[in-house]
Length: 98
Image 1 (tube, one colour):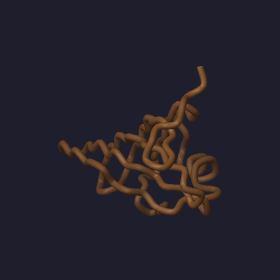
Image 2: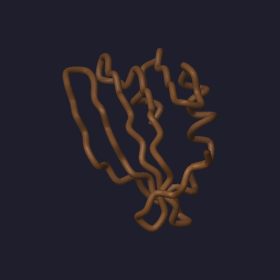
Image 3: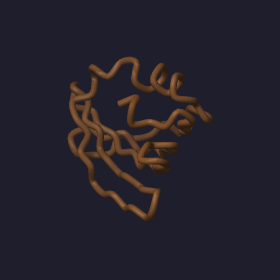
Image 4: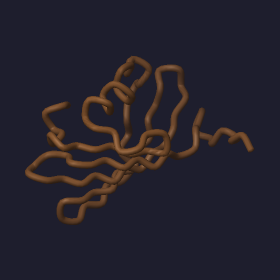
């Protein structure tokens, strides 16, 4: 997966501000054993940019939805901005703390 990312890759989320490639893999992909699968719900592409919405299903049955905005350059992913969705279980949204 690292080869798909540009050398100057950057990642931003509500919990991560402008991480470089090394920090992205350390913080976001260190432990992936809990992920059962990702189900792509929609993709919109315009030029070198794309929005992807997906549902991630965990091995314990929990799930969540995210939308990610990708920017590409030279055939590689240059930037990802992720927007978190609400947690889901058994096809229903879980109540969020207030």
